[in-house]
Image (tube, rainbow, N blue to C red; front, side, top):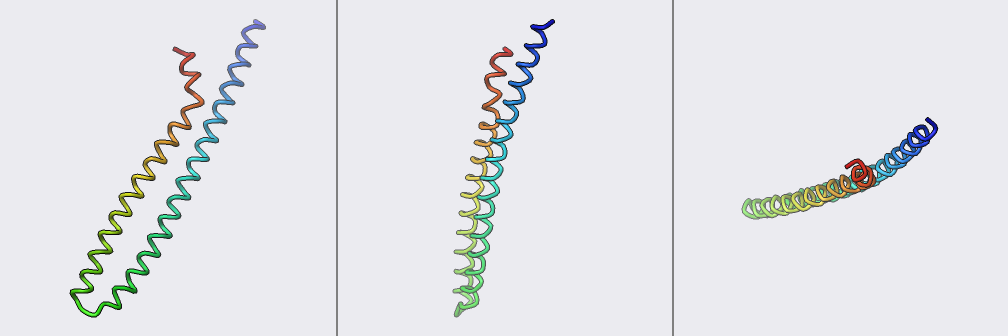
Length: 109
């Protein structure tokens, strides 16, 4: 009976430690994602404001259309790059959060 209690205590402590490590990884990853999203939003807003100023200074309709087309192209490229970066951060977050449980899963097999 004593051995069973000791084993249970040992595994409970290991599981709690593993959970805390995983939670720390989740917190770190979520913070990185939030920081990246905040930076992208700020940059996007600044680019949009600069675009509006540039659009108002256009001398002709053709110039305005060209300015708008350039802005849309650049905004799309920036969005795709940011979406790729965020998806990589989410993948890293999942890997890092799972890492502490790898040894427990290996022992269970």
